[in-house]
Image 1 (cartoon, helix red, strand yellow):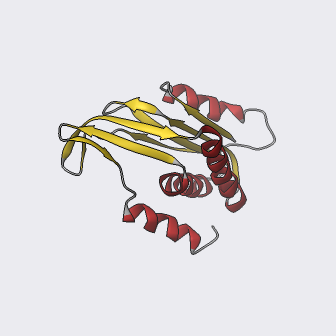
Image 2 (cartoon, rainbow, N blue to C red; image 1 turned 120 degrees about the vertical axis):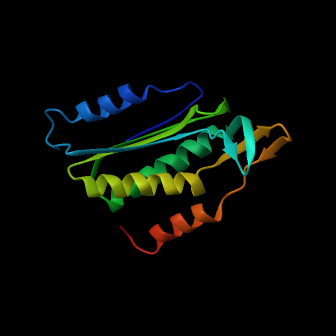
Length: 157
């Protein structure tokens, strides 16, 4: 279970290979690796995005992401998970977030990965500001993200 908040980009291939190989020779056999990568959109709400700046309070953010990871571990039989979330100023198509989960079976990994991502969108203390040709604006939470989180709250896994 790893949480990293960083400015620098991550190597997707390296991160996934490291997770996949981490189970080699252990008592827990990895049968599935599910991942999600989020990136900066080129367009949002009809406007071209020049940059996206992500801000956070380090200790608060790390605690929140660790709590989300721990909740996923309690709900599903997962072997390992990784959350990498970038902060700072990013450009369109830059990677923002990686969520990856390993388990013996795909269903557990898919559910845990989706759960972690849904909670990151709604419960992680990140503040996002977009720069467009019309100026800067803070990104508001979306109702669809709240609905995705509520789905998990209505059942325990």
